Length: 122
Image (cartoon, rainbow, N blue to C red; front, top):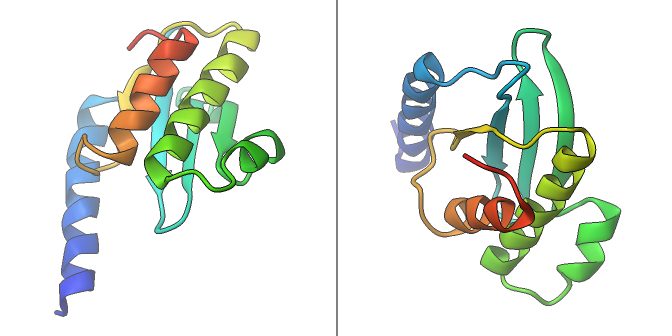
């Protein structure tokens, strides 16, 4: 197995381990994160009904213009703030953070900090 496939397989393994413990409820939905080489995606999900309650990414119109020329970590922080704004509009204050098997540093940490600055409680 080549290096990239192995890294992806290990990330999925960590993600499954995290998902065994973290589940979104109507009172405390799950904030899940997806990271690609260029973009960061985040959404607040209620797992009992299977609905996405709020979502934001670096490709959303409001965030995309603000991210022009910014580093990826700074862009992730903007995504976190935008997601927090949308979640609060939907009436959500508390979330369970699902890092998606990624290490809690860099862009994932910046997104979480941005969401906290925006008013979400983990």
